[in-house]
Image 1 (cartoon, each protein chain N blue to C red):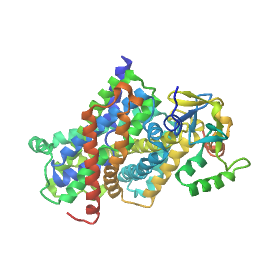
Image 2: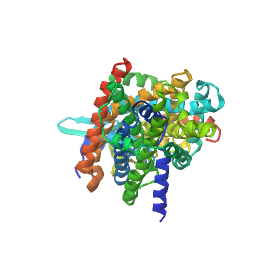
Image 3: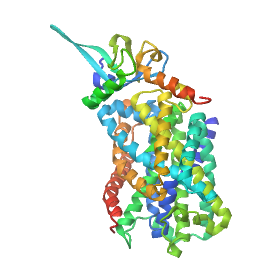
Length: 405
Length: 120
């Protein structure tokens, strides 16, 4: 009974923790410019992250290794450093974007420009990590994130074009600006399939001492939790298609984003949007900083654990402290959070093959997983999605930067 | 039991006698003996060996930096192979690492920074 209560909590927190500045921004841009046409990328990204999260949980429960630990052990130091460095720099940009999201949400309420709030936002996330526990980060903040269900309510109220949405669930070629279309498509994939998510999830499974009894709950949480999470992303796209597209508005600055909810509900909608952005980005900030510190500590064999006192894992605790500080400084200098978000999501997509292919090799290694290795269908789906995302991102990022179409 | 050095020892996790993480095995030192086959003498742990594996210059720089922290520092940390046992999925040391040079940086960071932050 207790285990299934845990499943329910896992599903709820997966839903509440799904949205963050990356998924909100990229879905809003997609809806504003291409209406429902890019909904299929959210579905694809959600399937991919659902599969990866299930694999990450299964890997930790069966092998008792975290992914970073096993990657170093299996491939050696030189190979381990490649995804470590790549994921570190890309995730640092994503982290800066999330801190920017928290700071923007405070700007929306106070009117004081976001760079002023970057360091206090990072300090708040640091306080949660330093003084809090894994359960506070995973459950507490994610439960508050259920406020994002407001996007579903707004979409239903505004009147969804079900036929258009249904057509958007199937991939189609763009009727304008193809380079920009593919850039947004890979940004959505990058926002959905962030590598930090499965490093965080597998570390959490070790922190919570999962074993093979957790395999079935893990499958349910990954499928239902991520499925409903993806549904929230689709809701943001739908609301953007209903709010921005008819008015010919492109999402080019973050101050436009509250319109998603204020169009329906006025000042209350504005406040709900600011609250959603604050909670979801704060949660993502804590998770990314933690995930990066996990990866470094596990790869180098240090003591680590969000539930340990910082004095028991000083190197680990100071690693996430420095990471938060560096990422916050990127926002202190005033880098536009919206541009940083879009670029960092596309870069995440470009890094996916490097992050995912070694993980797939681990998932097929009987030394770690015994009889619980991957099936061919899961392998093939993840391999194709990550390789395609990587290739399309590498092609579309330069085109987007030089303004080609 | 057959142990493959690169697969089962190098880059594997070390646990100490109190079950705490004591780093990864960053290097393996073989002893060459006259007229006899080589023997595994030591493992090496710590940033100097790790950095040297990546790049010799980087390793030398890390060693010079480490030497500033006191006598006996600035050289790789070596542990005799006889003090290590295989304890799947890790390798186990027969000492508590917190009292050894393996945890020197951890101890220094704890004392110099973490303990000065209120309620840590």
